[in-house]
Image (cartoon, rainbow, N blue to C red; front, side, top):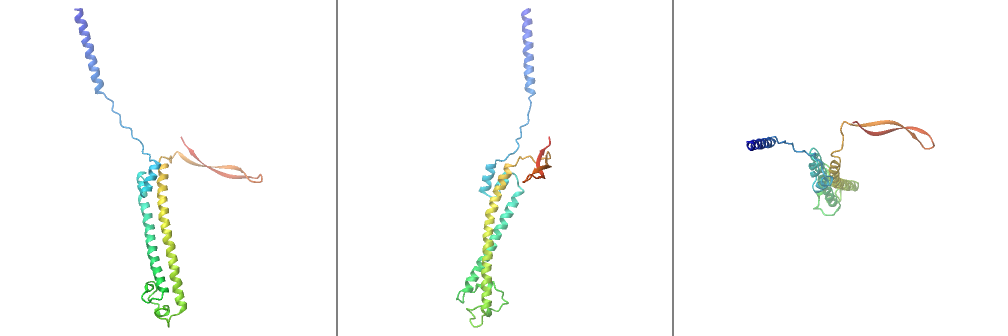
Length: 213
């Protein structure tokens, strides 16, 4: 009888352990995955901007800057093309205007048709041209050559400069991506006493950042 009683106690304890394990398995705690805050790498952002304009801004998730980057490039490329085209036009006109070949007359494209050709063309009309008028158009075309050449070259420089600015922008954005610019930052201004040369005392103003906790 005592043996039966011990066996019964053991069976009850085993049943309780099984129920406890089943309950523990049914009550698993589900934790949400940790969301890591995006933080761009400065070197990667810079290299992407170097490889192709705008990629650095895409990597930094500053999508609104992409149109700005390409509008700047588009305007500069258009300026380079416009000034280059006119430079070639006036250079050709100047060369034709100063040579002694009647067939080369591209200068007629840049001189107003209302001006009588007989007054300025010594090759076609050697007996009627006016030297002062000829000199005027010669110098004017040369000035236009210099003008369009200068702005064509400046446009090329601008393209290179804008490319460097886009790289610098991507670099700075990545470096300061998580910089605290929240409402807890306050700009503080305070008067200070300054010692001027000669032992004089003057008033100044100090500027600082204050963090409110």
